[in-house]
Length: 58
Image (cartoon, rainbow, N blue to C red; front, side, top):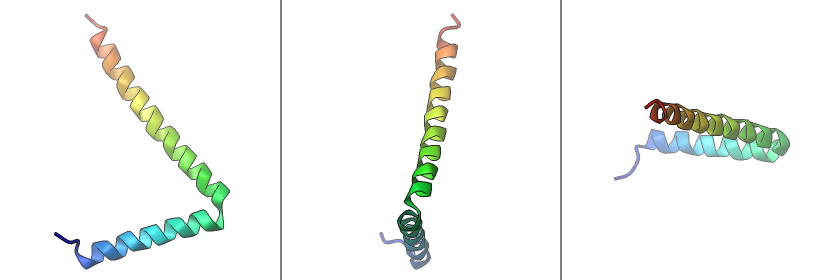
């Protein structure tokens, strides 16, 4: 099953934009990735804390 042409075009535009952003300002791109990683890490930690609190309330 292949993707419709519009999805391929949008995907390629996103990839090209990301490559352009990384190549033109690598330090800012690294800061953005670092910030995104912090958001994901904190989200996962909060989920674990939530379930840990649920399981410890016996």
